[in-house]
Structures are given as C-alpha cells and as structure tokens.
Image (cartoon, rainbow, N blue to C red; front, side, top):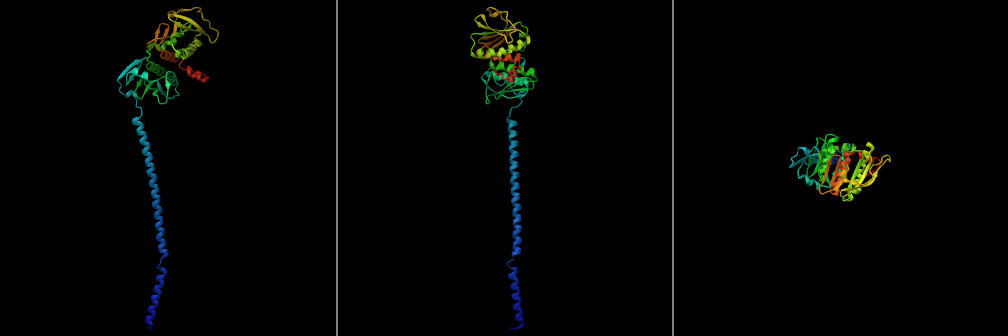
Length: 323
C-alpha cells in the first residue's frame, strides 16, 4: 500500500469518527424539543384565556338579557296606559281595563311591604278584608300622583301624601267590596267626636263576620274616640225598628250612660250596622250606616276604623294585640 493510500484511509476513518460523534446530534435534537414544548404551553395558555373570555361574555349577555327582559315585560307606569272604564270615588280618579264591578272577584291579593306609615296602614286595611296569597292579584300602594289604576296583572293605589294615599285606599276598598261610599266619608271622625254618647247599633239579622269581627273592629275605633272625648260607648242590638241596650262599653269606669231603657232605632245617632241587599256607607246627619251583606258590613267597619284611627293596628301590634 502506498503512502497516499494510507493517508486517504486515515482521513476516511477520521471523517467517519466525527460523523459517529455528531451524527446522532442529541444536543441539536434536544434544543428542537425544548422549543416545541414552550410553544405548546403558550398555545394552551392562550386557549384557557380565550375560554375565560367566552364565559365572561356569555355571563354579561345573560345579565343584560335578563335586565332587558325585566324592562320590556315588567310593569310599566300605569298612568300612561289606555283604559276603557273610569270613575271617581272619594275624589280619586279611577281608571280600569275592565268593568269596575269585576274587581269584586279579586278577593285573593298580594301586597308589597313598605316602611311608609300610610302605605302600611292601607296594607292593613286591605289585608283585613281580603284573602292574602303570594300568587294573588297584586295591589301596589305607592307614593305618586293620586289615582287608582286597575289592570289585569294588578292594581296601583297612589297618592302624593298620607292623606291622599289613605283616601285612595278607602276608595279602592269600597270598589273591591262593592260598597257605595259618599264623598264626605272622611268627615266621620268629626261627626262622631261631637256627640255626647257614642252609639253602636248592630242588626240582629247580620251574620257571624259582623258579630265576631265587625263589633270588635269598630269597637276599637270608638274606644279611640272615647279616650279623646270622654263620651261613653253604648252598644245596641236591633230587632226590627226597636233597639235594645246590650251593654255599656266602659273601659275606664268613669263614664256612665244616661240610657236606661229600649228605644226606637231611628232616634239613635252614631254608627248603625244594618243587614241590606245594597252595599253602602250612608251618612245622614249624626248617623253613619254601614249596610249590605255580612261581608260588606264587616268591610265597612274596617274602612271606618281606619278613617278614625289609621295608626290603631300598628299601635295594637306594638303591644302584641292583633285582631
């Protein structure tokens, strides 16, 4: 073998050796794998970020969608509506989508709580003559421009101040119970306060509601007047045209009645609870007549009580007395 052939053979061996060392290329291949892992991690992070953004976007759409639904489907200002029927009761304008007498069918109602004293007093009045139910006909008593608005989905009873709220409340109660109420209804406290004796006459033909609840309801109101005027309270039982003195309500023992015998009912002033086919609160001189069915007469006692002493129920509840 020549010298040149030996040198050529050695060069091939060196070349093969270098190839065998660098050929597998662990480091170059390792660097390529590391770069691919970082890229994958970044892609996963971006995917998670995009998912969070999508979830947040959906939540925002749901919230705004719910808000839009409430705005579009919720109760609108009733004073802006169109009504087929209207009337005026106790000086309060009444507007209704259906005949006013149909309101008598809505005995089950739902009321909204309030910290306002007049609204609370109205709620007491309406709850006393209704069947309370969360799914009942919604009656909203609110402080706003005076008026009564009656719709299929609910009613609004409104007044700008306590006096207007209570007037609207009494008007709504009269309508709901089918009772005809005179414009001078709010003068009842002044009429009774000027009498020397406070008389309550109950028709013996009335039913259980008037006797068990109505007498107590109006009795509390007369007791309030008694504490202010000092006049005794006399309870009479009516049989035909004759009234029999039943008892003398004398809470303090200081007041003595001058009545010692029976009397003609027509000669007795005060409050008369009378069985009748016509529901009405009638005012004639010094006499106030609550007449109608048993339920209507009882409703009349609730209305009159709340006119005489609008804060009475709240004061009684403060001392754990309910009725």
